[in-house]
Amino acid sequence: MQKARFEGKAAVITGGSRGIGAAVARRLAGEGAAVAIGYRGNREAAHALVAELAGDGGRAVAVQADVADPEQTRVLIDRAVEEFGRLDVLASCAGIEHFGALEEITPADFDRLFAVNTRGQLFAVQHAAAHMKEGGRIVLTSSVSASRAVFGHTLYASSKAAVESMVLNLSAELGQRGITVNAIAPGGTATDMAAEHGTAYQHPGLVGKMSMDEWAGVQIALKRLAHPSEVAAGYAFLASDDAAYMTGRTLRIDGGMF
Ligand SMILES: NC(=O)c1ccc[n+]([C@@H]2O[C@H](COP(=O)([O-])OP(=O)(O)OC[C@H]3O[C@@H](n4cnc5c(N)ncnc54)[C@H](OP(=O)(O)O)[C@@H]3O)[C@@H](O)[C@H]2O)c1
Image (cartoon, rainbow, N blue to C red; front, top):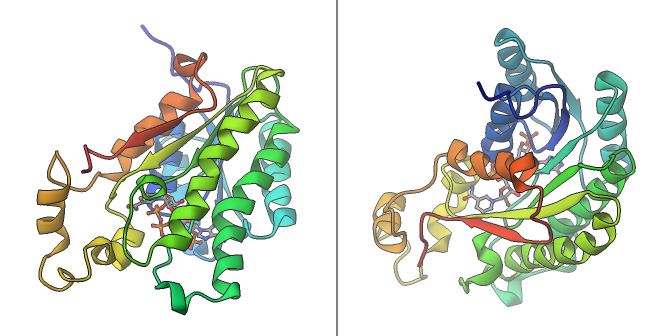
């Protein structure tokens, strides 16, 4: 029988309280990992997930840490190491959306988006890698938006495009220590983020004329949004030994988005 892939391993998941990050926490814990779940404000959801995972026999803790502040990320990672005695996997899932036309973007919008989606991920890698041994696995989060043109999406898309270059370049350094670093680029995934912003992905001429499901039906080969667990499977793959010879790459999981 195959051994659980993450038995005896410990993982930190930023943005683990909801959506894709929560699905990653469930998947890694379900395959044996002890997980530290980072969240920004949603304490209740994070602690409910810890209780759920503990109820299933897993080991989990929740730690409040705003990834826009690298010191808070350091506290999250240090707490995981303190609690579990090691760190094998970083799944960096925390992220925020933004839509706004060029003339509406403010320097504060820019700083906020990049502080969370880009700078936040870089410093999560820095703090996590400091604790990892050979075989460590780092999985960051980009988006299909990094390589698609969408009206009003410049800030979000470019904050994610930088992440794809980040993993490519970090792979050279971390490869020296036998640590891999890759990214997942999810397509439309049924989470709170998609519920809140999903229709903004439509051409401005179509907004209000198509439901999210109708849009997915014409824009995605598989004709629907992803379930978060389907995207989480990609994080688990990149975090596992199955992906031992894969680094510096971004894996799109988008149902065949046009
Ligand atoms: N859903 C999609 O269609 C889609 C597509 C492509 C890429 N993505 C990317 O996938 C990732 C997860 O997205 P999602 O759809 O699951 O989002 P979501 O449902 O909005 O959940 C966001 C998660 O990130 C956390 N978070 C937000 N800002 C944070 C901060 N400053 N510090 C720490 N945690 C923070 C939230 O914590 P709280 O619960 O405490 O607020 C929550 O756990 C993001 O990086 C997103 O950009 C999503």
